[in-house]
Image (cartoon, rainbow, N blue to C red; front, side, top):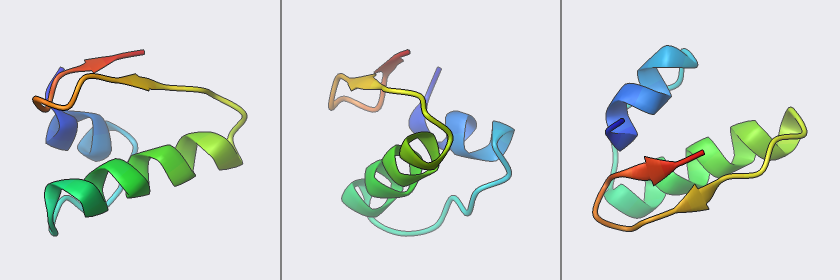
Length: 46
């Protein structure tokens, strides 16, 4: 899935820089006890 799609699925804001989006998603998952592994071409491995 694309980074912005992952944010939308979780009800998170999709505006900002790529680094902002990654941090937003990481923070969401840290708060919910889930770890993510990122590939920085906007594709994610969960």
